[in-house]
Image (cartoon, rainbow, N blue to C red):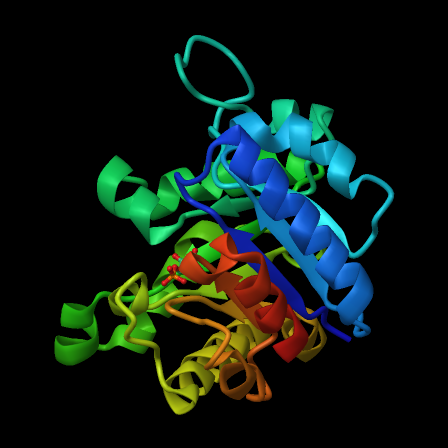
Length: 253
Ligand code: 13P
């Protein structure tokens, strides 16, 4: 059975003090209010990960994730963070290929394949992001476009390695816009991606792959989105910055 996962992508937000407050609030609310076995992943800015570790340590329901890592093992890459460094501070997840990284930092499918490899070599679970722009949705085979992102960055993996990947479908037009994909639009893409994975790796691996939805998912719409059979949780931006909203989304899963 695939895991239900709700991950909070804080992006470039929060001071250290605010990050600590948000984390402790989320930890307490989850402990008191959430009875299901959904895996919660908090992805703060990387420099807070070591501090926040103590708030989630020993709590199997809440893990920490980074928002990116570099594709090389180590070396002269000023300002970058290696997968081995994340591993060394017990980080379990890493978001890779977020559309903001693709758009503002020019990340390509080929580069992301390398980031996926180095993350897996270091025992991190990649949350691999994919998704189409509004223009692509309106004018081209947008499902084919998203399938191709997965093909080019993930389909070199062995079945065993692919089994460790989490996918996050994030239509770019829905990110931070307040414009959510409808439950039907999300389900259509998630089912197509699961089928695509099945054609490459077989039904069992496809069935076991968690595919999260991201893009203006919030306390109000999460339950409807997560009710779809192929939507296995969410990657949450804005709504993950408030403990009450984020916990409501977790409960919806
Ligand atoms: P919003 O939830 O703010 O739209 O952001 C989604 C996202 O990009 C999560 O990675």
